Length: 138
Length: 137
Image (cartoon, rainbow over all chains, first blue to last red; front, side, top):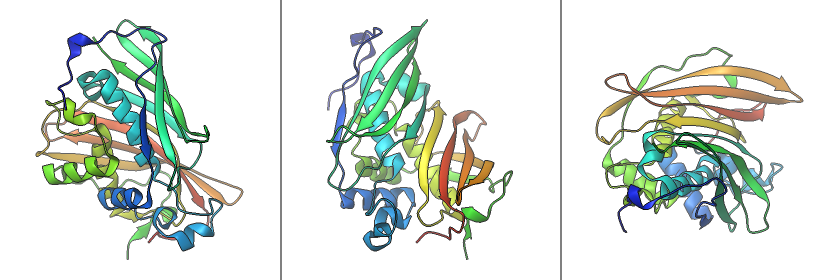
């Protein structure tokens, strides 16, 4: 893996951020539950999840949101980690078997503070997460 | 018996929790979310959501998520430093709670500070669950 270098990057309003795509599996959901301590049966227990409006297990929202954070890290490097912010709503559920793509676009630059629209969609182009991110680059 | 979040009123403050993000735990988190980018930012040891996940894990030791709880929104701002092995202090409170059509909508504010008192992360999670929700799992 190559090291992130700040001097290589320029940012313009309208730029599309490099997207991140991951496939959700039940094993990945189980691993995230172990790491996060969130053992909600909606994520882990197919029999329980079948009784909910979702009809089956779904991924943790914070697992899907991690893909957005990875995208921002790839785009903005240390600046994202030194001082990032986001505000999102979870619009739909990511299920085992789904291919989830996090994407974003720069919508505003206020003196070195970059504002982005961010979202996640599944393979059927259904919206799972939408919101905005902010990062100071200077 | 662990308390359920469903039982907590607006204004409830969770007990302050000290957390240590060990390299081992961070490595497990990064594997679980398959973060391929964080390794390229060599001067930082962990993704911001690792800090959030670790803090939430500590809070869930105090009050379990109700069965079928759904995460509907998240705000988070962070200012990370490079040290993965020092302790941080997590604080949280139930900032809002309302009921509508059989569902509770709860906002939980979370902040994480370094040992020196610098704010590393703050934010708000919004969750919803059935009014009759019991502890999960």
